Image 1: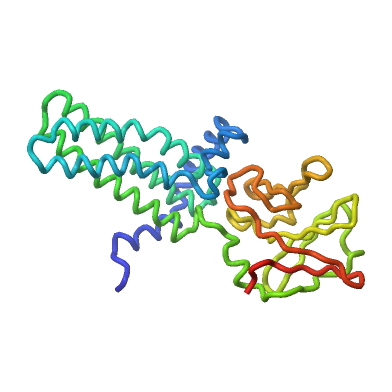
Image 2: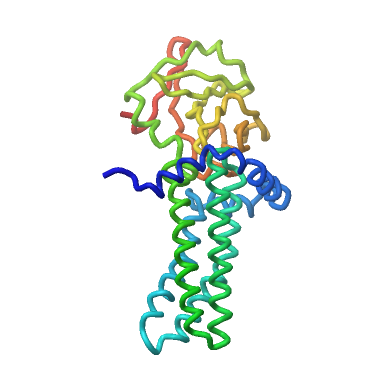
Length: 293
């Protein structure tokens, strides 16, 4: 079955350069208001290991769908009104998490994201009008406004699905790494090739790998080199942190990972980097990814 025409039109949004100006303006505003820190990490979903927005957006959508269903049955006017109000109360956390993710999208994603956000803002405004009409006793207009608002929100949800699944905006971009590397140990170079305190990029098969040799000690550490957020090149990033707690900062969106463990320290990445086991045999550094193949 071929894609339907309305959904094919979404693909064209990715090339709509006229949206770049307002999209960039919104991203810059979010960066100004929301500085890097625990709140931004929470809104990205770092503590739970995947984006927060798809979870919290279920609250307004769920309550509004329930209200629209109750509107078809007599004697449910008060319950439907409460559900519409509850959905509006759930909008701020859904919007905050969505804007936080939006601020780190690349241009093609941001174009779709801007229309997604605008559609949901319009749908929310229509639901607010529906609640106002219900409160005034204008039940018929309140119900029709609720149905119109739900259609807008569902359209916005379709755009969100395009962002998440077609454009992989919240996906783990390192999920395929274990499936693309043969099991066992693989040489990546002589130990002398890796200067202490410097990152280096190598490949195992077709998979880029980041090699890190601390300034002290004889250990060597290796992580998948493509950032789990949007596949940024980690070897081109910077090293921060005290000795023993060094981190790599992605050059694209400043996701921060511990070099020794691959764990996320700061988002927008929510998934840790795959970490390779390492050993030195006859002066050659070898890496092995647990679960590979």
